[in-house]
Amino acid sequence: GDSVTQMEGPVTLSEEAFLTINCTYTATGYPSLFWYVQYPGEGLQLLLKATKADDKGSNKGFEATYRKETTSFHLEKGSVQVSDSAVYFCALKDTGGFKTIFGAGTRLFVKA
Amino acid sequence: DAGITQSPRHKVTETGTPVTLRCHQTENHRYMYWYRQDPGHGLRLIHYSYGVKDTDKGEVSDGYSVSRSKTEDFLLTLESATSSQTSVYFCAISEGRMGGAQDTQYFGPGTRLTVL
Image 1 (cartoon, rainbow over the protein chains, first blue to last red):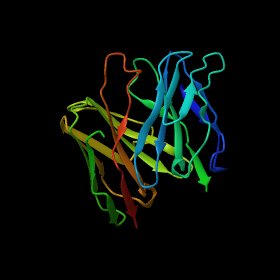
Image 2: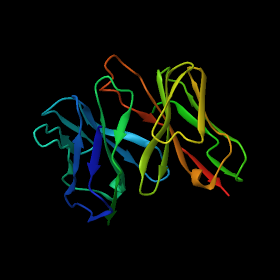
Image 3: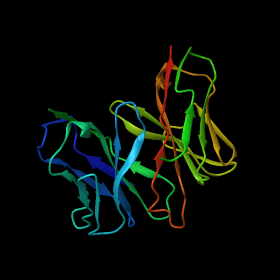
């Protein structure tokens, strides 16, 4: 079945450092790919998404490119801030399905 | 922000008691979901609904039941709570457009349930 694998955390960075969180997926169809973010004490919220191969999703300085050849959707940000400290979830949703498949989440700590 | 509320936000109960969590949406979205979030397990789908009175099981449905009598409300019931059901519970909604692959899920703020 469909699945999502993302790098284990926690990831600890200093402010202004470059961020990469790896995500790979397995899917039988042509899924859409998502990154969700969860700030402390809150529910998940959409950060960005890409709906077909080679699409780049971007938001708030974060980017991720849908790579079908490597089945990957890595999240990147050029310069992280303390306010980016959160848990990041990679997810996929396949065509015709009702369910979204989530990765286990990666916790990011950014130090001032 | 999507209009999703969950009640209660916090609950402490004892083993063996029934518990009902409520999710209410004002977006008129077709799909509603219940997840639980536990350390080391990420988000796990309990049940979901694709319309009024239309529900189906997720990956961890044992010990839980759901009901949806109106578009805006989705109830999660623990018939006889156990300590293993201590968790944070999230409700989510999505539009359910044709094809569905592009659907974004919108999450409620969560309910922290402790079963003693």
